[in-house]
Length: 248
Image (cartoon, rainbow, N blue to C red):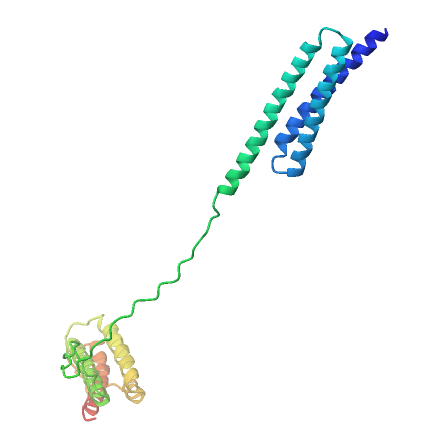
């Protein structure tokens, strides 16, 4: 029973030493950028290697004849872990050297290029300037000319209305009654009054107040005779207005 407990403790001791060695290697691998942690991993590895050698010597003393084998195995194990540790150290040194060998990025800003200077412009004062190519605008008519043109247009329109009234009078001098004459006479009178109102309100009032002519045609039947008399009275007033407008 005592021998069993002793062998179990020896096995646990061996596994603990191996765990320390593995933890030291792992710690060394993960602490490449931290010098303090890397040094602590090296110390743990050295201590674990020492424990393995001490355990091998103790085990060999207890079991005579097997010291050489145990020492050989321990040396191989320590050498293997040492090779791994040296490789890790060499890799870390190479990484640091590569990081230090990378040149820093230097950005050089170019100065702004000044604008090119143009040569001075030569002005020839003795050279005649070219003639303008634009067409001059037509002269606008003066106020008297506009007024004259307006009066001429008004006299032309009144003359046409007077001529239309004369045609209605001629149509009334027939022996056959014409039912369309009253409508024609009223339409002519309305258009004439509207135009006169746009020219002169007094002339429009005179035209509207005109009465039927006293002259009649006994041989002309009604209503042609009455329409002729009414239109004739208005055409006489319109003729006077047109005559007065022509003497302005």
